[in-house]
Amino acid sequence: MAKGMTLLWGSGSPPCWRVMIALEEKNLQGYNQKLLSLEKLEHKSKELLDINPRGQLPTFKHGDNVLSESYAVCFYLESQFKSQGTKLIPDGPAEQALMYQRMFEGLTFYEKLNVVIYYSFDWFVPEGERHESALKRNKEALVTELRLWEGYLQKLGSGSYLAGPSFTLADVVVFPTVGTVFRFGLSPERYPKLGEYHNLLKERPSIRASWPPHWLESPKGLDTLKDI
Amino acid sequence: MAKLMSLLWGAGSPPCWRVMITLEEKKLQGYKRKLLSFEKGEHKSQEVLEVNPRGQLPAFKHGDIILNESCATCLYLENQFKSQGIKLIPDSAEDQAVMYQRMMEGLALTDKLNSVIYYDCSVPEEERHDSAVKRNKEALTAELKLWEGYLENVSAGSYLAGAFSLADVIVFPSIACAFRFGLSVGRYPKLAKYYSLLKNRASIKTTWPPHWVASPQGYDILKDL
Image 1 (cartoon, rainbow over the protein chains, first blue to last red):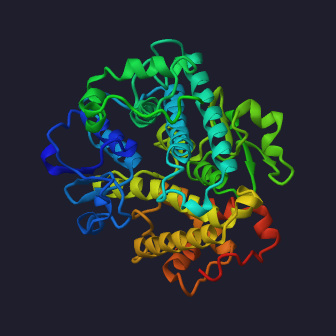
Image 2 (image 1 turned 180 degrees about the horizontal axis):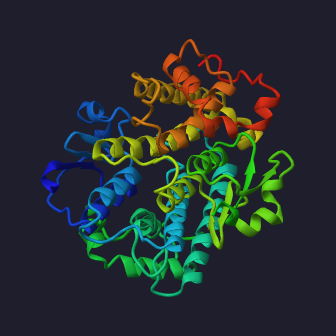
């Protein structure tokens, strides 16, 4: 099954990481994969643009099916491989609703993070368009967002996952963002519930197996977020 | 079933519209609903904040269950009411792949539309740049061309992923907004065909934004794209 699958990915990209976690959880290891360099703009190469006109990673193929939206891949894999690996969508209505809710809030979380950590990159905001006032506002919005997630985890109690007692698609899609915030220096003292969640999940086999290789090579991250 | 459901919504908001279309498609008419005014800031009222701390619409309740993300609500409703109304997630792997892909790409379309239509609302005056406006318009144009391509073979019963599906539920409202804001029918004929085929679908006609019915003449922000 996995042999009919191919993933083009970039190291440290949360959307790519989501797909890799899902593949591990559904016991689909052994898929073909190619690591592209985002720094060298390999995601804008002809090879990729031929399969994915948006020139974005991840790009995933299963037979003739091509998917380049990470959430789409996750939903597709869970649906097609429901009976193998971890059950990633709970049946109970309350847990299911919470899972979907946190999944989509996860997109907001990811965006609010990006507008802070990538603000000073030209490909994100051209130099002539940057404003201190905008960066300040983006940081405040990120803090508000982080506090929401602290609250969500606080309410569920220690050892819980995002949608309750079981690991679900909500964790698959949101954990990479949480991994990134700590990589960029977020203080676990100021955000203890997120810190606990990070510590719990980083030991999970699917997450260990797919940990960004360049984070392993240089374990010391950045400190962009240390003061927020 | 629908009697245990309630929706706080705003007119013309694609996320709200998506939920309302889904409720119709799943034969869940009869839910309680309250129309709030974005202009009057009612989306930040205590009533909304109690359901949705983000102060955003739609805010949906089913008994004690709360869902404030439109895609989450639509997926939940399709899964919980799979056996009633229209089937919104196809069975075949191929159709499912396209459906989920277009659904999620639909969010990129909405963002790019918003970045043009609501530029002045969302960017403080001293931070606005013509270069940004230009770039946003170019990005939206490229995005619309992609969708024009996706709908190359559009016809009655053949929409974004074959039969009408969640992809159409999520994406149609943004396409409708694009035309409301002046997108050229001549330059985007496939999108225009998609729009005219679906605007008469029962679930869509019933939930058409009331103020669009009241004043059919829209805006022309997008007419030159």
